Length: 87
Image 1: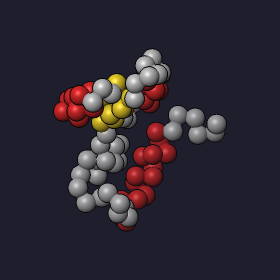
Image 2: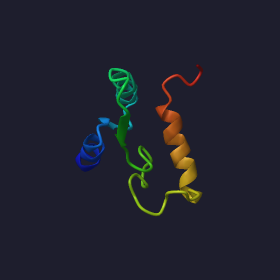
Image 3: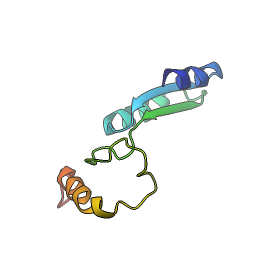
Image 4: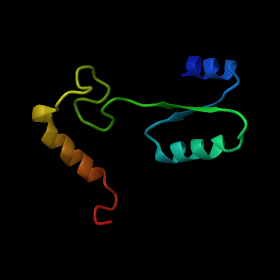
């Protein structure tokens, strides 16, 4: 991530590297980008494919593919992550 951040900075961009799975960090990055309105901002979000999906997180071979027999357990895990399901 440092390499990409340095590349953008070398062209005069305001660069912000964040954990792309942390919603508060994403919001903070957008807010911080407003501090330099005359300079373009690059928000670099570090993420993992399949974050929070048991048995597929950050593995090759699942990007853009149907989950097949792994679909049901993953849907159950995602449902459990919902904080306010009735909202």
